[in-house]
Amino acid sequence: MAIKRRTKVEPAFSMSSMTDIVFLLLIFFLVTSTLINPNALKLLLPKSTNQISTKASVSVSIKHYPERNTFSYHINGEEMPVPFSEIEPSLQELLQDSDDPTFSIYADKTVPIEEVVNLMNIAKRNKYKVILATSPE
Image (cartoon, rainbow, N blue to C red; front, side, top):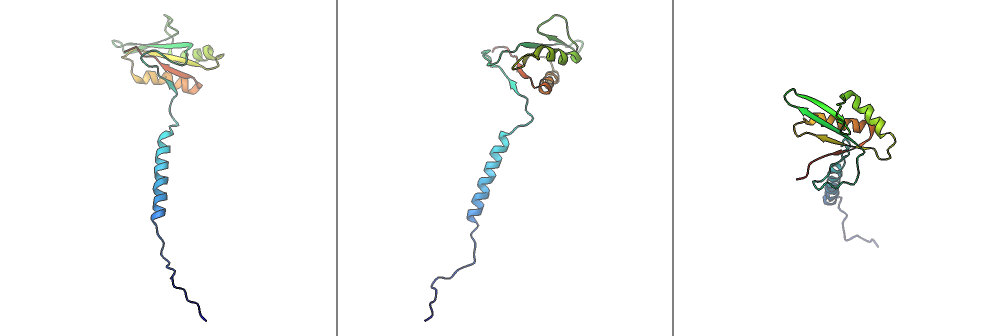
């Protein structure tokens, strides 16, 4: 007595489920890659209502003189300008005992962004937080 199978096994493979998985993985990696930004500076940008969560203990002002195309840097609103090479050591001295070292940047509208970025680089090297000061609307 020979028992015969009525159904035949076919060696075909359906790829539809595999394409669904690959598509979902692609969406997942695209979404997560846009959330990661490793080179971003941590900036605390205040809103125009002047409500910020962190109070800066030190301020650095940049004054632009367009007629001479020069800049002067002032720490904590002092009248005497400080050379750019002395800003980092001065900030390190002023913020060494702070638990959450933060300083604010006050820049004229005519100051090129390169000068502001130079101050942000000082903050990044020393792991300081930065507040970019703006005027109310």
